[in-house]
Amino acid sequence: MSDNRRHGKKDLLHTPEGVRDSYGPENSMRQETLRRIAGRTSLYGYQALETPSFEFFDVFSNEIGTTPSRELYKFFDREGNTMVLRPDFTPSVARCAAKYYMDETAPLRFRYAGSVFSNLSSLQGKLRESTQTGAELINDDSVQADAEMIAMLADCLKTAGLTEFQISIGNVEYFRGLCESLSMEEETEEALRDAISGKNYFAAEDLLISEGYSAKDRDLFLQVREYMATAEDLKRAEETAPGERARNAVRRLIRLWDMLCVYGVEKYVSFDLSLLSKYHYYTGVIFKAYTFGTGEPVATGGRYDHLLSYFGKEAPAIGWMIPVDALLEAMRRQHLPFTQEREPVQIRYGTDNFRQALEEASAYREKGIPAVLLPART
Image (cartoon, rainbow, N blue to C red; front, side, top):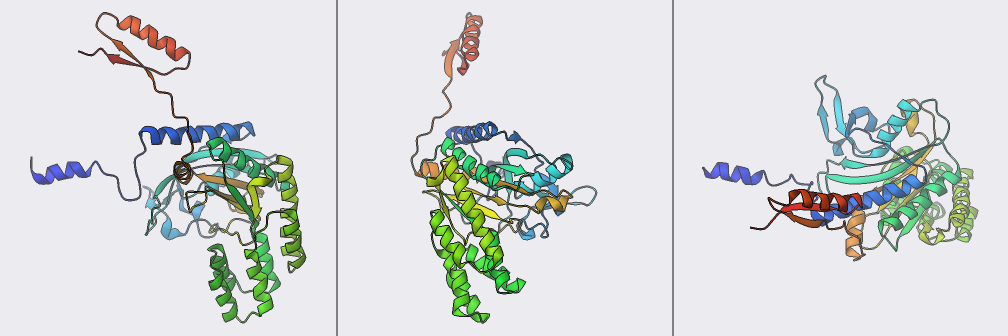
């Protein structure tokens, strides 16, 4: 065999950059985590939903406010339509809900799990294909719906195995209210949004100075850095909020705090008025969950009350997503105990006792105990 053919076969053993195999104990842990989260969300009445791995390009267009076009995996079908591997589940779920539940006005609860794809130019340790699981609540614009989603998220993270985490909650309406109160131009607002969402407050201040905003106006934006953990903190923010839109955003968070206290999850939450997202379809309450062992959030979510209108259905909605790879990495680094799948009972058989061995294996399986048949050692 030539060296070229030999090297070619070796190359087939490798995966492309940005994707990887999942096998053995790692895959068992992944599947068990997905099973636990699915089981927990089903107890809240969320039904499983599956959407295609690829959609028409317009489902993730710039107008909708999802992933930038340059970060999408695009290809053409035989009819010449531009297709996209999904980078995010939420627009797909919104499209599906609009298609099959167009006239439904009662609350809709969905859960999902699967792969998403990001065509990143610089990976920086990130995967191009990763696993996400999440939940969406559609047709309910109440603060009770906000509280249910955040409390259920806390429940799911605990069920997955996390013991210490914090869910940081904000409201994008607060930032928009600040910009509105100062009659800020859209281009400046967009640049300021990028700086604040990246926690680059020096860049935010420099931008405001270059645009001629006074020290008093600059302080309105920079005070969003303040940590808030109680209703009293939020009430102080309400008193200093400029304009009714910003004040209403804080009032919503105060009501949400009260509801989360009813759920008994207040120790897992705090508030951050600087919290924003790269997804522009978020319209109100927004949140991210953090824990030790990873710089990435182990969950993100928020309210997107206008997204379904792009698909012809006027309906409010809120949801969250857990990036399973980040969650598992945090759990590994925290050395959290995790119950692996039970090792199967090994039953040996020879030419004269196969029937007996099979009956024994079947008896174990009837009891829910895994059993594997192996040929007798020679």
